[in-house]
Length: 235
Image (cartoon, rainbow, N blue to C red):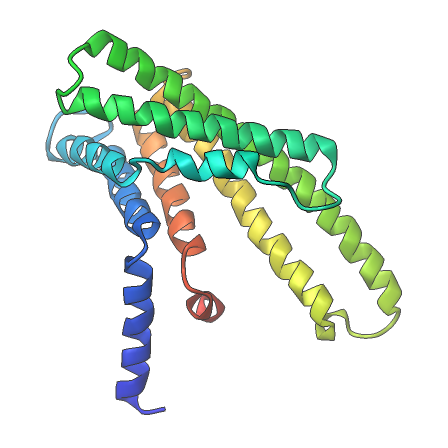
């Protein structure tokens, strides 16, 4: 492959990535929390960027609650334990509620909805819903990682002395385990971000801590949305 063709292929992946509304939202999220880290809650340019980006992201999420509403009423994978099903459905319900309430917050922040006190209250309720969905996500990932670990150990016993990394099924499970481990880290970070935004522990989770954790969480989200060829090249 020539250098020009390789460059065109790489640019094609970038275009494919940026065409995703979700990817643009996560890039804006990284800017939002990076600005929050820099401002540390103090007035100035960084805080203005934080506030404007926060408001802009709400536009990306208009009607996005339908996605989780659809997941809520969709059937689950066969063989999934009842506790994991309940946690998964709770996550969908809470996240859908968060995204729906977030639209009302957007109406309030833009001045379309005039009741500021109620907008602030709805904003806090929506953040509690997001924190609840992140807690459910954390528990689901822990449960699924446990199931994967047991499945991989069983497969390893079945393979006896053969090289497990040459087995396609084992490699697929290992890849799935790595993806779920990353999702677990992100969900745990999002809980910390929610605690910071709700100011539940202001001395421990300051605006700077919230910004730093939110920025790393956003980078993980950006990575998770990368096209497969780009992921495979990543170190």
